[in-house]
Length: 94
Image (spheres, rainbow, N blue to C red):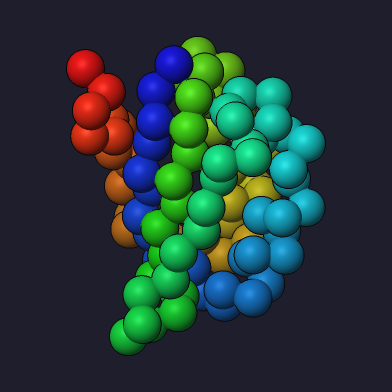
């Protein structure tokens, strides 16, 4: 299991966030959704970050490589060339 920090820009945060919230059941299949957080930068509310914990990387990879997910990301206004995914550990974790 991994912890991920995702950064990206979206075209319209409010629209994107409604879609993001609408897929809790999907994320719950591959991460600890109770710990998922979304952040915005103060300068640009469409510049966002997401923390995801205890991610099943195999299940995530399968989902994000699907044509359905790619279409959803585009529909929600994710700007794909700005998306970065980093793994992280909390301080004190090994």
